[in-house]
Length: 153
Image (cartoon, rainbow, N blue to C red; front, side):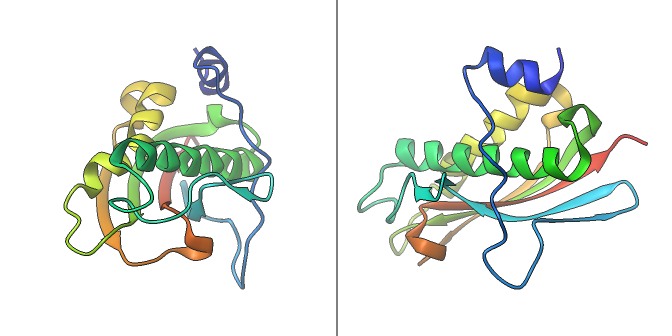
């Protein structure tokens, strides 16, 4: 099943690709690698999740925020290369969690993004990853993800 059909089967739709919010571009391609800038949990110009995990958000709602970030990344990938069928594999995910001091469950939050990539791409969605707690993210976002993707030749 192609990735976009898999998204539909999961009841998910890609948002409009988020525009860059600063002096950068959403994606950069070099060879067969596509580097995706960090995406936050914003859809249609509105934040879906704000605040810190451990305070305003829970691990579960943080994971939903990370899933929204992953959907935004997929929208940027599709905008860059035309179709999610062009993805050979998800190579690396950097996940950032807006969390209280001492928060130790960042991996559980970023699983929201990782699990979506696995559901959409199967084995090609398996990736290396970092999951880090931070004291703030743009627009108060609960999560942010950056992704490196290998494209099919």
